[in-house]
Amino acid sequence: MSSWTEWQSVKIDLGDSGQASTPKKAEATAVQNADFDYEHMSLEMCSEGRRNAPQPNASFGWQKSSRYNACWSKLIGVGDYIKKGEYVRPQVEDGYLVEATTVYHTYLGTADGAGVIGGTGLTPQTISMWTRLGNIVAYLDGKEIPADKLDEYRIGW
Image (cartoon, rainbow, N blue to C red; front, side, top):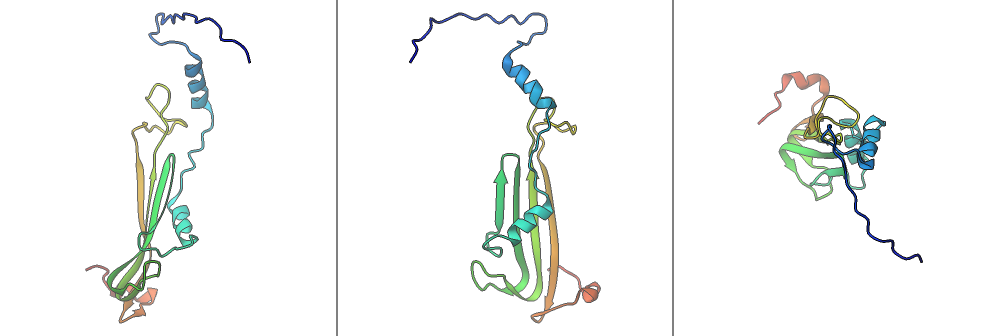
């Protein structure tokens, strides 16, 4: 084990630029120019994640979050339906079953705070959000209404 060295004083000259030239700033500049993978999920990836989850029909839905990304997906029964359990798909009598999915994206700011890593014209304060209602299946008297007949029905309550 080596001994400690004596403390040293450091002076940073801001010069005319008003900003210090430090290793952290140089490192941040390198990150700005590097390819950065946010690992953002799409609506399709989120829906697929729920469908492949151990409990895809959980009443609280399915969610996944990471540093710059979050998603939530759930099957929702609307109208008259029978809830058969916490993790069982609702049995719709009169109404419809819909897959609701929401995805959120956030972004890493550049060192100067004026943009985000990877460009795109966004700011670090930007939160992007997408919601989709899909895979809608309508029911009447407990029987599925064929897709080619749906024009005859109004979805809503």
